[in-house]
Amino acid sequence: MDVLILIGSKNDLSEIEGCVQLLKKFDVSFELHITSAHRTPKRTMEIVESAEKNGTKVIIAAAGMSAHLPGIVSALTVLPVIGVPLNASALNGLDSLLSIVQMPTGIPVGTTAIGKSGASNAAILAVSILAICDSSLTQKLKKYRKEMEESVIKADSELDAGYSSI
Image (spheres, one colour):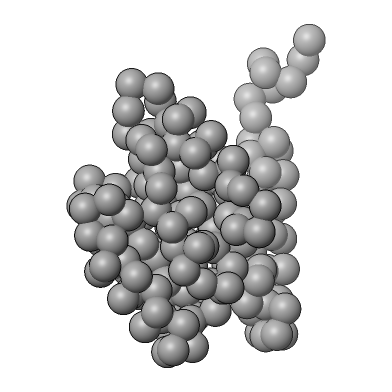
């Protein structure tokens, strides 16, 4: 497995759906587990240790509220960890973002935007990391970016004339 995705709660599944779909689009192997830094710390440690032994190359950890999961995971491994802050509190994910991004020196967590866009970007970042040693993934990333470019250009060309005149 190339990528391990960890979420703290079943409620987080809808937030990381874009991440899962993008990894599938790029044919990147992954596993998804629900584990909590607070409620199941031993399980979290076992999953991370197992992933390292099984050849996992990147870990994506998504969490809301205090969002300790990405930091705990990073403390348990030297693999790259991408943290995805989720909007799970009255603070609209800002608490999660600050918790993940403010890691102490020596225990880094790459951090994406809050919520669904952050989860999708975590997948793209994981694919980019994997593409360093995989030219077929590099080509897929280039194709993906070209498709995004073409979709913007197409949308612009389809604009109603009333929108384009000032």
